[in-house]
Image (tube, rainbow, N blue to C red):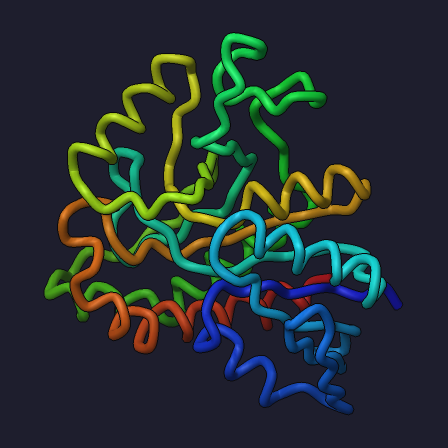
Amino acid sequence: MLRTAILSALPEEQAGLSSALQAPERVVHAGRTFHCGTLEGQDVVLALSGIGKVAAATTATALIERFGAARIVFTGVAGGLGEGVQVGDVVVAHDYLQHDMDASPLFPRWELPGYGRARLACDPHLAGLLSAAVDGCLQDLGTQAGAMEGTARAPCRHTGLVASGDLFVSTADGAKALCDALRAEDHDVLAVEMEGAAVAQVCADYRLPFAAVRTISDRADDTAHVDFARFVETVAARYADHIIRRFLQML
């Protein structure tokens, strides 16, 4: 049976998954804690990515080299950048870009040296399964995010480009500048976070399938820090648990 690695950004997003593991085994390796076992009939290993691209890349490499992961799926939160991408929505990544990669003038801005491109594609099959899992989750739980925000708007799923970088985008001016620069080069970004692109690059190097899903916790503006912890606990954590369980059932 192929082993699926589930990476999460925050411990709240894995609490339900780790407690439901069958035949659990806890392993400490490279300063990180990994939980191996069976979930929804699948061989899995759970881990927290750490914050930032380097930490995420280290964790992804350990999952492959030490734990034999055959595919990696990331679940976490992100700031919404795209038009119509609102708090409580869910973004399934189609591809990734490092918004702080700039080796110009040696290479075009955002291009990954040695790769010949700026964007790294996610695995279409895994992304499709995640999309189906998200749709089911939103149908069951979607009203919770709307209720938290004081609106009757039903959360939506979006699929497209996600940008990562070692910078917490938390001002309206910064978010607009980032969007404008990327869109000027036809990179129509939906969301921004701090880990996914690094994991995508590690998986590309190892030729492993990778997919990612992110719940929108804020609009990457001056209110990005408001009620973040409450959102993670009441909305994002439940979304992650239900989405990953549905995803594993479909493998």
